[in-house]
Image (cartoon, rainbow, N blue to C red; front, side, top):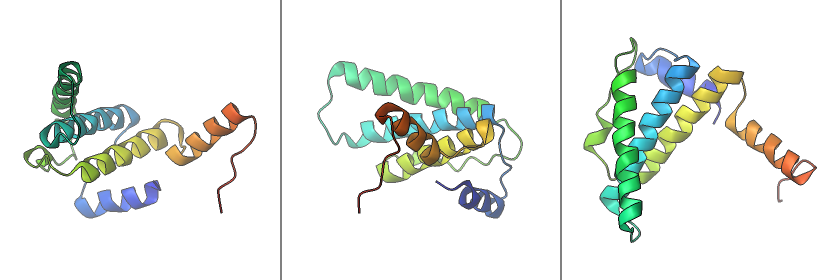
Length: 129
């Protein structure tokens, strides 16, 4: 995702732009929310092992959330009250991963993925038209 859009969203919400450490913790918090949402909906049959794994991700996400929620300029919007929207939780993960990579190395997630694909293939991937 283009970070210019995310920056404008932050500006309109009155949020401060995080450093890469905070962005990574925000991302981990969002992964926990996604795990929690998936458990709440259970769109697939989960084994006990899978359920425990997602429960652990949700708990660790809460721990990350507790750390970053103490950062000035961050507004907690109580997303954890509504656990049903998988698409919104995945979008939050995408947003925070984008912010992390931008703040860490100035690269977009899409560009990093294209770079990795080209390395694995030995040539740049051409979009299907």
